[in-house]
Image 1 (tube, rainbow, N blue to C red):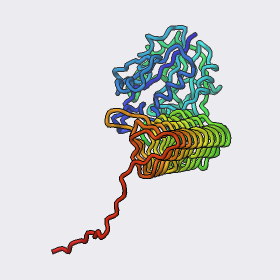
Image 2 (cartoon, rainbow, N blue to C red):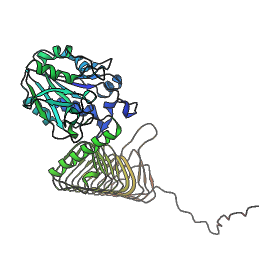
Image 3 (cartoon, rainbow, N blue to C red):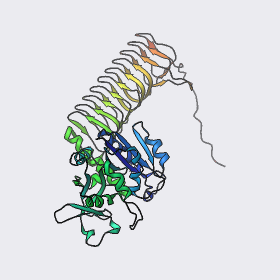
Image 4 (cartoon, rainbow, N blue to C red):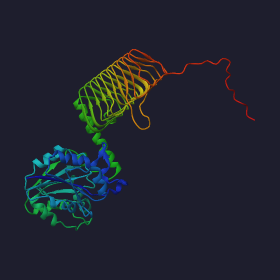
Length: 456
C-alpha cells in the first residue's frame, strides 16, 4: 500500500480581494500552500499531487519542486471533481489523503493519527467540534454514533444546523473504491457542485467502515477565505511557535509580540524582548539576549552574546560573548569572532571581525578582514567599491583606526599600526606604523565671516 496526497489548491479566493492566488497568501512568512506541502512531505508519500486552477501558473512558478505533480482543474466544479483530476496517478492498492491548500496549521501528528486509525480498505475522515459551526458541513451520525453522511451548510435542515461536529474536508480514501465513488457523485445540490463529502454516504451504503479522528482544536483545521481569517491563522501560528520556544528554554517578554517566520533552533536560557522578528533559519545558542525591536534573518548567534535593541542581522554569524548594537546592521557574510563588538549605527557586510575587536559606532566596514584586538574609530569607512568591482580591506591584529578614516581598498593596515583621525588611506600602512593621509591645516588670520545682506 502506497500513500498519495492530493492537495486542493484551485480556488480563486475572491474574498481576499487580491490578484495573488489565495493559497499563496503567507502565514508566518511563507505561502499557506507551502505549509501544507511541507506537512505532506513529512508523511513520506509515494506522490504529492497539487490540484491548481485560478492563478495556476503563478502557483506553480512560486512553489515548483521535483517531488510535486501539478494537476490542472480547468473548471472548478467542486471538491469531488478536483480530486478526480488526480486519479490517473493513483492505483487501486493506494490510499489517497485529501488536504486543502489554505489550511496551514494542520499538524503532521494529526495526519499520522488519521492514517494509523484508518484500515486500508476503509474511509477515514477528520472532524472537529465547533463552538460556532456556521459555514461547515455537519456530520450526521446514527443512534449508535456511527457516521452516516455529511450535509453542507446550504443543504442542511434547521435541526441539522444545530450539530456542532463539523466536517474539515480532510479524508483518507481507499484507492480501490475512489474511482467508483467519484464517478457516482451527483451535483444535485444548492451549489451545483460535485461534493467530495458525498462519498461518505456512498461508503455507508456499501457497508464500508468509516473511521473518524477529531482535530485538536478549531484553529488546526481552519482555512482562510479572507484577510481577517488570514490574520487569525497568523496569530495562532505565532502563539504555537512562542509556546514551543518557551518549552525549549526561551523567556519571552511578551509571547504575543514575537514573530517567527522560518525555522528557529534555540538553546537554554534565551531572553527575547518585545517585537522581535526571526526569519529564515535562525540558530540561537545558550544564554543569548535579544533586546526589543530586532530583526534576525538566516543567522547564527552563539552562546553568551547580546543583540541590543533595533539591530538587524541577515546572513550573519555572531560568535560567543559578542556585543551587537543598538541600531547595528550586520549584512550577509558578516562573521564576528569571540568577544567582538559592533556598536550603534555600524553596518558590516562580508566582513570577518576578529576576536575582541571593536567597531563601536557610526562606521561602515564592508569586504574586510579585521584581525584580533583591533579598534575601529567612529566614522570609519572601507571604500570597497569603484563602481564596477569590490575590493578587500585588511586590518591587522591590534591595529587602531582613527576616527573618520576612509580606507580606500584594496589596502592593508598592518599589525599594531595606527591611522590618524581624518585620514584617507590609499596605500598600505606597515606594521606598527602611523599612517597619515590628510591635508595640512592652514589658519587664516583676519578672516571675516560672511554677513547676511538686508533685503530690499
